[in-house]
Image (cartoon, rainbow, N blue to C red; front, side, top):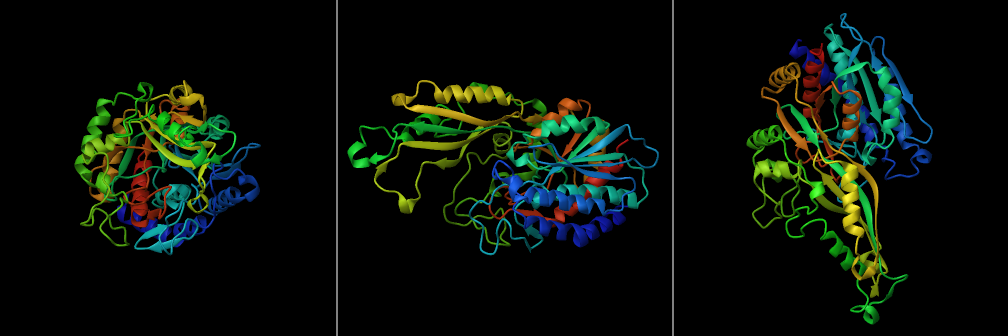
Length: 486
């Protein structure tokens, strides 16, 4: 493969075609169905998937078939199938994965930015969804075209682009059951919905955490009462909720207390964390937007102001990587029953509801973890309060199979030729339920799970961005890998 020609092709395609498409994509509030129950009526998911389909159909790729696959009541998927070239045969395939649904708006966007307001600034495209993960389908077909432009043999390429990943992919099993027989024997899964430790080399995701999500509700009264009259006698529903959370984790350290939610870390993953920690150093924790740190455009992301700033649970790079990839952690991501500050009177509220997000080690069973949390939260409630934990998903994580020598060699070559550095492996703290589903359907498949979500990219949060230069080079690197699959 001519690297100079590959670089020229992908850069031109990104500048002239992909970036304008992604700018338009950012503008559409295509929220995942978990955040937009009226998604079908609003039509935003329909708009982005039809736009992607139309773009794909316009690409000059010989023999490609492309369709939107729909099942009544479920979010739609985009499926494409591109035959192999150079006599490689169509029995086996490379499967590209991505999604077009988005997280909700989130507050805290800096002036001039917003979730549905695309802004290109300092080599970054700001706005919701371009990096997570709207670029994937466009990059996938660019990869195919870049290989074909050099008239190199290429394996059969198929793609599955969903629209409910940010809600835990509840609709995907039905589509996978329908479409798997059409995919051939998947030899490599190229998932473009993950992250990177820096923007200097090819990063391969070795594991993904699982997730238990749900709502904890504590009810004490049938209606609110005067706090002066009742407080001290009627227990606060919020205080009871605090007590219940103390059954789940240590409030001082964050350590999760339920043994069912822990797993042994494999030796290979420990070694990879040590290697990644040596590469990244303090950048593992410094790239988060800590209070007291400078977040102005152009500021050094690793630089901190001289005055006091918030600190992580650990500053050891290896332990920091393991803490966010192989250890369970509880977050409260939402609340109900709490009035806004300007309307909060002296009232003892009747109930408190908290949205819980429990990240699980990759090898912990999501259903078993859900049962353990429900039992811990609901049993023997303080003051005989009415306590319920209603789980809305329990997703098992993913631990990649051992990397085959042929894939390891391709990754080494791709990273060295494109970035001039060795590839690196790292676990990710997020959840992509599709990976486990694929592993069950295609047990012999190898995985290249990677992505553009690097330092400060802030997926799901305010000021989310796509690092354009890295996206171009990642496209080059994955093209080199795919071209070598036999």
